Every structure is written in structure tokens, then in C-alpha cells.
Length: 164
Image 1 (cartoon, helix red, strand yellow):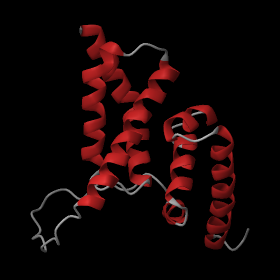
Image 2 (cartoon, rainbow, N blue to C red):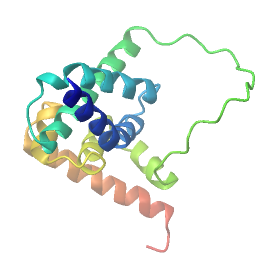
Image 3 (cartoon, rainbow, N blue to C red):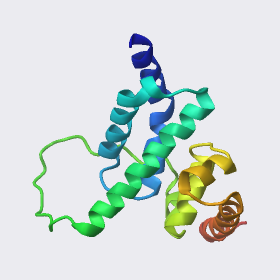
């Protein structure tokens, strides 16, 4: 039990920033809350998990992918009510996005499928096979999405830097 808690704590320490980046890149509402849900499940189920660090990374991102799909389905069924203006409470502002503004803007030009593949491949640092398994696609489909996404990103980013 203590070993499970330690492994879950290490997983959080090692993977939470990448998972949060994944959630933000996919424009998940309340990404910090979804991150919490992901790691609550990790803590709850870590005792049943078997595998090395690479398998743990795939498992955590599979959980994150499922939470993203749940969030999108929940939002489609019941859009949030119109928000009322909020008075400044003096609370700390949200943390800055860890990505350069040009990259954030370029990622926003991609389709959701392309963005997910790129983020899983390069932020989560997962293999083509792992991304295919997580997203329910073939490796060939992941390669095609990645190729088109990288071409689109190159065009979008070069639009920001005319000296290229």
C-alpha cells in the first residue's frame, strides 16, 4: 500500500506537467480539475497496474484521454450556463501558459485530432504505437495525422516569423 502511494506520487511528479500541457492544448475546460480527476484515478487504481515507467506513462495518458472524451461529451450534452461577470477577488491570476504564444496560436489552427496526436507524441513523448492505442487509431492513421499537423504547424509558425 505504501509502495503504491509512493509510485503514484512519483507518477504525479513526473507526469502531471505533461498531462496538464496535454489538457490545455486540447482546450479542456478547467484543465486543473481534470488533471486532479486523472490522478485520483491513478491513485485509486495504481495497485492493479503492472508495468515499467513507459507503460505507466501510456496508462496515465490513456486515463487523461478518457477524461478528455468524457469532458467533451458532458459539455455537448449540457453546455455551461452563461457566466455572470466576476468581481476581482484578489485571487492569484492563472499561471502563464508554458508554451510560446506563437505555438499556442499554431496549435489552435489544427483539428482536434491533429492537435491530440501532436501533443501525445511531442508533449507526452509517447510512441506512435502508444498514441494509436490511446486514440483508437491505426499507426498509419496516427502517422498521417502527425504529418499533416506538422506541415500545418510549420506554415502557421512561419507566418509569425517572416525572416524564415
